[in-house]
Amino acid sequence: MSLFRISAAALLLGFATPALAGRLPVVLGATEVFASDALSGVALSGFDPVAYVIEGQPVPGLAQHEAVFAGLAWRFSSAANRAAFLRRPEAFLPRAGGYDALAAAAGRLVTPDPFLFAIRQGRLYFFRTAENRRRFLDDEGAAGAAERGWNRVRARLVQS
Image (tube, rainbow, N blue to C red; front, top):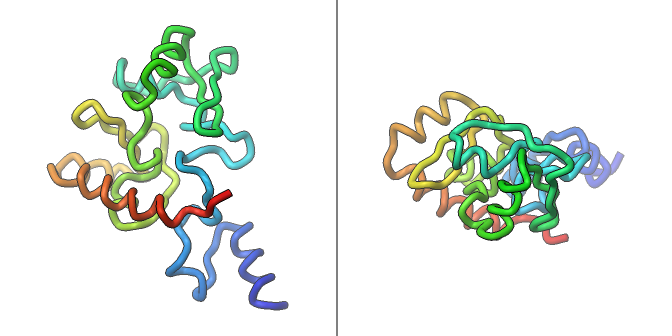
């Protein structure tokens, strides 16, 4: 089996070969500027991005209140939340593309847990682990590091 086939299989299975490890983000083959479900194309695992910011908690979105933004389906718990998002998406979009903010600070894309989030200065951040969330909250400079890391990672994303 050729290195290409091994690498392709590794990508499909979610593993990086040593030859690719330094060049690819953890979310292998990532093309999206925002984390999303690979099969459905739904952002934030279907949770309402407005509810995180306004209500301070994850609230499941509903298909009847779905909107497409940045090539992804975003779900909202109400028509009002959908309208608020479409009026000012930058106020509700997750930072670091909705990936784990501390991993982004380190230059990696890691799929987050939608229940592990933080709001800092009105901005929404996600994390894969409770430990990453705790470290982020304990470090005043973590948000800036996440932004800088995300900008570097974003520049490396596969362009589709």
